[in-house]
Amino acid sequence: MNSKLTIMSIFGFALAGVYVLNDLFYAFSFLIIGFVFIWGVFKNKNIWYHSSAHLIVGAILSLVLAAYEVIRFLSNILVFIMEDGEFPLFNYPIIIYGVISYTLFKMEMKALKDKKNQIN
Image (cartoon, rainbow, N blue to C red; front, side):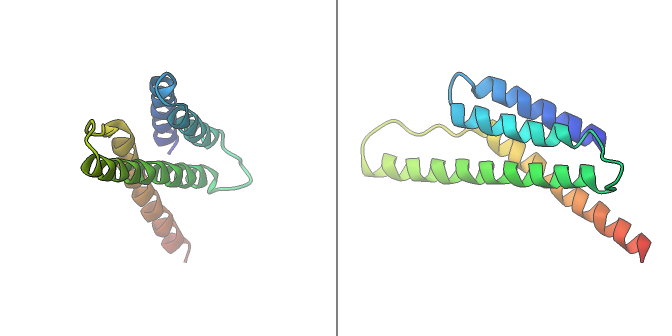
């Protein structure tokens, strides 16, 4: 569990560093996502699902950011079609990070359901 959170937080901080010179919105977003993931590493012993909750929330934030990037790209394609201009660039790292986050989200939800079935 903690290894997933640590890896995702490292990728989040790395992407924040990459985007800090190009786009502050993405840099700030990845910084927040990285902090959400890293905060889940420090377990709260009173709450057994603490790290799972941080993984799920960080993954949802990553998915929202990936959806924003897809919508931004599609709207820029519409501008490209309507006016003559430069073809818009697609930020692949954001989408890849969103896909990885979605995969971890599904794995974590499955693990929580299995844990719930073990309790019952």
